[in-house]
Image 1 (cartoon, chains in turn blue, yellow):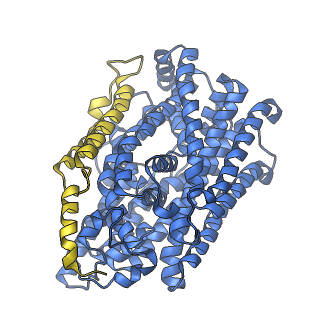
Image 2: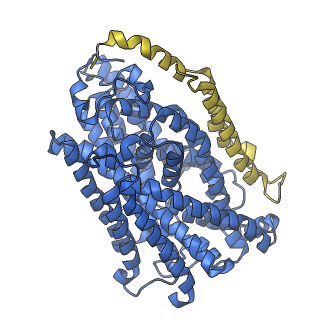
Image 3: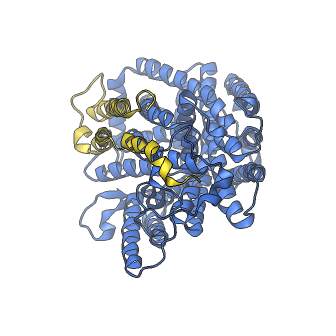
Length: 549
Length: 80
């Protein structure tokens, strides 16, 4: 009943409204004379320094869903859920090497999206369109997932209604506010709010990891409680350690997720908004502070086991919603006002990434669909306007996903999202290093990788569903005599690469036209203040240069 | 844009900056956290944490240390 949670609700609402006000004020923060340009609205003027980038990219990658779902996974499956830690360790060295190149070439040519880069690099509007659509499709369910995070909190506070509309009203209101300030302030809004979000999260987690083990009898007892729970469960793959069957899955999932994460358009948006290469490189050694936080948050799942938390019922009868274990743990163990702060941290934690994701998706639509196919001579002001409106449409779509579909469905979509965004790896990430692949080879590879990935995900069953039951594909399906499983995304992208390479060799032998590379080797090292930087509006004008292999 | 000849002298040092052998060190924090044999065990425990947990958390420090070292060794010095 919500009356029992009145203090929590008041604290939550107060903090939520406070950051919303900040979101509106953000338009004036570090703002130029003219906000009517996509660089300003969608990339914060490409001016963010070390601290802002740290909060922005961190706020982007560690979402409300992470804070709710990773401990929920630990609660349900044990060690397998800890994959989030190696996953967020291997990301940063990868970015250090790869994404600085994307920053440089984008800075030099005024690219706003990864598809802009692909279009110039491979001289292929079709490939760019595929990259843009892949990005938009993969991002939508990710935004919807942020709502799942808020919903878990609201549910715990007893804010639920009888029918679908009443149950979702608080989320609809929250997203309407979010949509309004994103529309007005663009990327500056999440950048400013990220400070508050992360400060709240750090406070809550530091208190939780000091106070809860003390209250629950120490870490030894917490791990013992988790061990006892998994020993008693019939599932052969849970436990506080990995077993022979799920190690390969653990490692490939961690690596594949790391590769996928920085291909997501919203992460690239965060990186492109920084003001120079130095800011990115420095951040790659400072951002892992969040990984430590994530590891500790993951262990909240075990604390919930030790504290005897019983998750709330799920959407369908007889199921349980593990996403509620962390909010319930706070509700049981902390005074009401502090639980309210923790809920606000999760709720606000949903807004920052949701805003950045909708901006990234909107930029993709504007640059690679609207400007490419609908209105080639769009002015910067028109681009900014289209992006603002698209960002609203994207958020309405995400809310509709939650209101009209089972939230579990969004979680499945997100799983698919990770696999499909990985299929942009050959064109975007490898494209930063080499133009060896033929554009048609990349298109064919993308199609085959995508098809294979979908087929594999369709085959994966779980105890509750026959298809799309997870991302762990049994190798026995390929005819291997083993019970091991592997992450679908890694297999799909490997096949994608192999196909792209074979088709490239064939096309090269047949001497098929390859198009003209719009970039040159030095572009990948350009830094702030480079004299050759062209404004985004002129990027089409400089496409006629000699091809570079 | 400008003709290629005048650009050549200014861009040559920029390329050298990116192709540092120090970058190879970055493969350590990419590869080590992905080898389960290192961390998939219970003992020794540290503060009650099985090895699986404390060692993977310690890999974060490995990542921070390596990226910081590489950043310091490869960043442009002075006004190059």
